[in-house]
Amino acid sequence: MTAEEATAPEGSERADGDGHLEGDGPDTETRPLTSEAIRDALPQDLDSGGVTGPYMFPDNNRRRIPAVLYWAVSAACVTTWFLTRDSHPVLVNAGFLWAAAGLAVVGAYSFVAGWDLNIDERDALVVAVKQVGFPVGHASAQMGWRGMLSRPTWRILLYEAEDPPTQRGLVLVDGVDGSVVEWFVEANPENWDEL
Image (cartoon, rainbow, N blue to C red):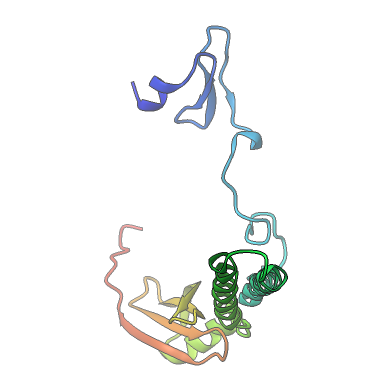
C-alpha cells in the first residue's frame, strides 16, 4: 500500500498507471482522466500545444511590468511615510522608508534585467549554422539566461546532416545582439546503428 492509498479518504479518487481515475468505493468505475483532474498547466502564452502557425517565444522585456509595480508600491511607502511622519514612532516611519528603498532597488534590477529579445530561435539557428561550419540536419533551440543581469541566450544544439551524424555542436547565441557567446564542435559519441 502506498502513502497515497493509506491517506486517501473513503470514496476519494486517484489515478492508476494507465491514466484513469479509480474510486475507492464499491460502486465506482474506472474512467479516463479529464481536464478537470489536471492541476498543473503551463500559462497560456507558454503552451505551444494548440499553436498551428509559427510559435513566438515570449519576450524577456515582460520583466519590466513587475518593475513598474515595485516602483508603484515603493512610491506608496514613501507617501505613507510622508503622511504619517509626525503621528507614529520613528521606527515605524523608518520602516516605510527602508521598504521603499528595497522595492526601488528590486524594481531597478527587474527593469534592467528585462532585455528586449531581438533574436528569435530562427535567427539564432542561422548564426549557429554559420559558426559550426558543417551542414546541419537536426537542431534544437532552448532559451536560457546568463550573468547577474540575466541576459537572454539561445542554446542551439546541432547535428550534422549525414545519416547518422558524425559531428554535433553546441552554440550559445546572445538573444539581444545575435553574437556568439561560446561554441564547440565534437565527434558525435552516440551510436545510432541500431536505429
